Image (cartoon, rainbow over all chains, first blue to last red; front, side, top):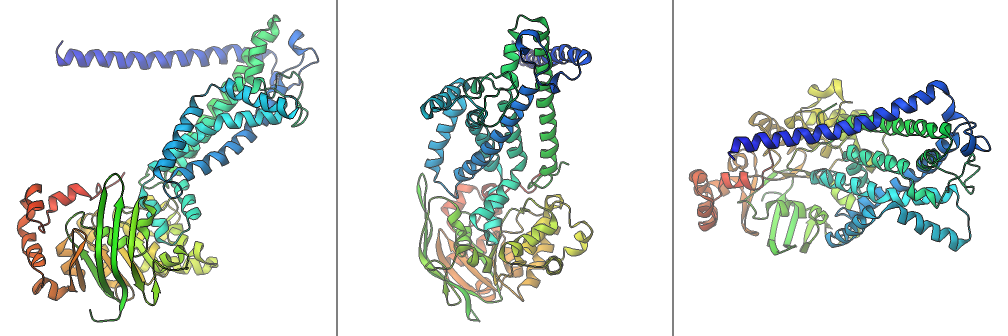
Length: 286
Length: 288
């Protein structure tokens, strides 16, 4: 095979794989939007109506409980994971830890990253049993935060590593403390840090396994931090498995809400990242 | 040296203990005169930047740097001291080689230092920012867009912004690490003019690759070779009547050595090789 055939063949493979991925994505989003959208046309309030007392059986009411459950679990979890992961990522830079330490910690982070979320769920369940508590919203928050933590830390660590050392030198050279310098470095790395936070949020809001044993699969409105709750992914699973056709159709409506939320988040993160990239050293895009 | 030294190193040793141990500075004792511009010259990798950074302990942010000896700053000591490091670094400022804006607006780039060190009213900050930007001849170019990101300026403007930023914390000494090496000739000339005017008020210690620049700007010259001090003298004596053999070799070899191979320059020792240096540790001229 001559060089030019080789080049053509690879070009074909590259285009085909890109087209395949985009096609599958478009199909998933399209089907969800179409079938979910249809439910919203006939019953526009389904996502903001509390469920009836026998929702899973007769589809009475809507699934506001899971929408709120998702928000109440994932938003605080993201905030907790963000604080922890940013602190860890700063610690991993050379100002605080030696190269060896950060290598070891990075290895642990990789292990955590690769751990299936159901394992976190079971781990937190063990804790729940040990302290004699019941599945509740607060444990969902803890499980999701643990799940998000390695994802956000890796993003933040990579972003901080990619900022030029001269930013640090410049800040120290002005007489800044380590904390002040860390804040400057984080600002310089903000586009990457934000991408990591949004990614953590999106992964958190879409995960079912961590929530299953920790917050539970409640079909009632969340009462408080120590009451059972549920999130959209678990609801979708339950709805799709229902024998009631109306409840099954609600699964698309719930997926619709989830997908629109994730798409919106990605757009927001792009806008934010672009806004801060203007300030990053060497950044000129607006 | 004519004046009382502003800064004096006493038998300074710096060793990097990474994968292999490298002695970057070996027993360097040298005086830096007050309100003068001292150029540190020497071939690549001879410890110029290390000497510069060790003067305000900036090399300590790299892992694996070990140091012994002492630096005297007036009647203070830089190493054996109880004073917090940030206070010391405020008095001995540092301008990095690559023009690096802080990730904030032009105004805040200059105001950042004063803000972390003390309480200033908005009015005082405004005045300070203007004064510093005027000192580096940047005010007229940026006065109407102080809220733009620092990164939106040209490379040469950023380097002058960096100088202004360092001046804003009112240091006594400015350490400049090859501040013109990443700049085009015109911007470099502007920065040189700025340095020229600043040395009335400040003690400036700069590392440079360029002998011509040292000739143009320096009052005193410090010549390092492989981590050792070869000669420190006032510029006129250094260039016209060098004392050490290595200096003579370095000065005479400089003009003729531009086409030397890398191996030649390492064999013949003191001859610097511009091409090798630019391949070695100069950054890409423009970062986009």
